[in-house]
Image (tube, rainbow, N blue to C red; front, top):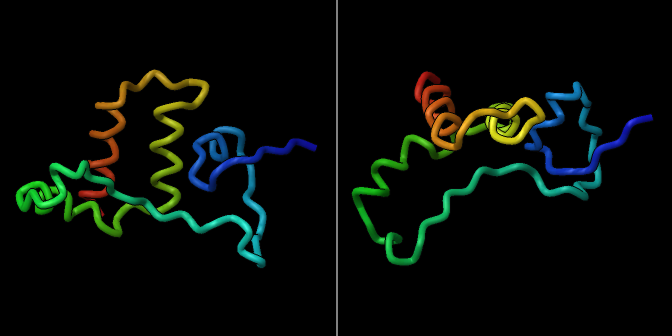
Length: 93
């Protein structure tokens, strides 16, 4: 038996073809992508407008793929390349 503990957005779930177990008691919090801004940018209206397309657009499968691209055993994608891939993926939805 092979076990793996981690977050549901962990890229290695896809890499190793693992299955996530049901969590009927909700012991693990659900996945929610969160945008965090530095306090000095919190009231930057232009930045808010640029980030709006990201809201509610990154599902767990997409985040899992992005994480795999960034940190999987075959990871050779620099952060900027992963960010571009993610943007293209969600912009096309």
